[in-house]
Image 1 (cartoon, rainbow, N blue to C red):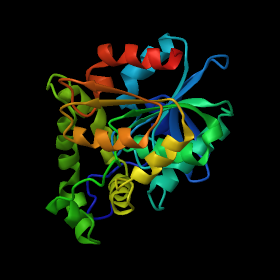
Image 2: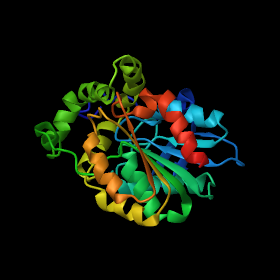
Image 3: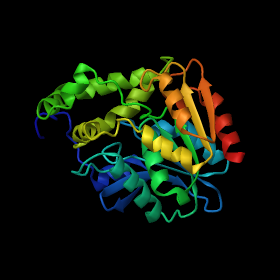
Length: 292
């Protein structure tokens, strides 16, 4: 086990893939873990997660839209969940390419309804800007990139070669587990969420992937990408929790100004993941957007 990532003791093996459920598909950069509720005659919705929490974060949305009759795809970004951790640069180019190659491999060729959460916002926006003919509607949930995230002292230290690896290896696991609690407004769901989140941290390559993502501007200023999306005139839904501590609510103004056909919903008493924490309120908004 390479120092300093002493807690990363597992490899992604065939036996592990069989044990976690879902499906796996080989793409040029590695295997991608995904779940697709198959109904080829239905409209397709694709769910893209954010910085570190894998596809289980979409569970309420995935189940709701499946039951509503949609063909729904969710998957783990490279370096997260049970997708591979290729030794490459983790940036928006990689993640947009992964999405493109996944759709091609699954033979999803019709225009899709594309949902992005947090860092999934600039990923989906990058994909839509490059492949506008493949996107029918875009839904953004507290999207990162309206402005660059504030760089705290610890964040700057993590960007420093060698020192960043040492800090991530020794302290990163617990900091990440504690950090996902900040996504919630109410505490009731936190323990269960952290229990689902933690297993991926033991798979080799996770810390390396997280650091590479931080160092290659995937969390930087993506306002130019959002302006490009605004020029495309795709119907767009924007949802933001008023009490978001992860991607502050005041960034919503920047994103709204970049988009043209946008429906903007502020969710009161909600943090960074309103679709998860406030599913009963959000699901009807999503369904209305898809039907109209």
